[in-house]
Amino acid sequence: MATSLFVTGASSGIGAAFLEQVPADVNEPHTFSRRPADGRWTQVDLGHQRQWETVVSAFKQALDAEQPDHAIFFHCSGGGDPVGRVVDLDPLEYGLVVTMNAASGIALGQAFLRACHLRGMRATLVLTGSPAADKDVPGMAHYCAAKDGMQHWGRIVAMEMTPESGNRVITVVPYAVLTEIVKSVMTKDPDEVPLVNYFRHVETAGEFASPETCARHIWTAIHEASNGAVVPVGALVIAERAAAAAS
Image (cartoon, rainbow, N blue to C red):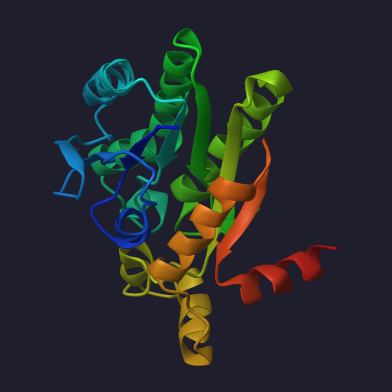
C-alpha cells in the first residue's frame, strides 16, 4: 500500500528530524520551505499567500502521479520572530509571520483534505500546535493566537471527518523542544518576553527534548493516534506536569 508524504518547514529542527525517520514504505517526501530540505524540495515562503498555490498544485500533481492509498501532510512551518511588544515590532515582518502561523496551515490543510477527498484517497493531516496556544505570553501575542486558532480549526475539521472515510486530523503539541525558534526566543530580553526565564529554567534542569526525540513521537502519533487526537510530543515529562496542573 503506497503512502504519499508532504511536509512544510522541513529544512531544520523538528521537520528535518521528521524526514530522517520516514519509514521505508512511504514514498519520497515532497517538501516545502524557504531553505533547502531533503526530499523533493520546492522553495516557498508561506508568509506570502500567493506562494500557497505552488503547494496546492504539488498536492494534486503528486497524488495523481503516485496514486497512493494513503496521503500524509505534516504542516510543520512556523516562525517566532519578530518577538517583543507589538508596539516595538515592524508591521511588515509582523504581517508575514501572522500569515504563515495563523493562516497557511488552515488554508493548505483544507486544500490537502479536499485534494484527497476528490480522488478517493485516505488522508492524514498533522498540524503542529503549541503549549502556548491557550496561554497569555507577553512578547509572543501573534504566536499564541495563531496556534490557538489553528488548533481550534483542527478540532472542528476532525469532527467533520466521517469514520468510514478513514481520514484523520491530528494535532501534535511539541513541549520544550530545542528548535531554532526556541533558541531565538532565549536571546530576547526577559523583561519584554517573560518566556525567556522559563526556557532558561528548562535548560538548567536539562529537560529540553531534541528534535529527533520529538520526531519519533510524531511518527508514533501518525501510526497510532485517532482522528481528532491532540498528542503531546517532545519533553513528555513537562507535558505530564502541565496536564497534572490543569486537572
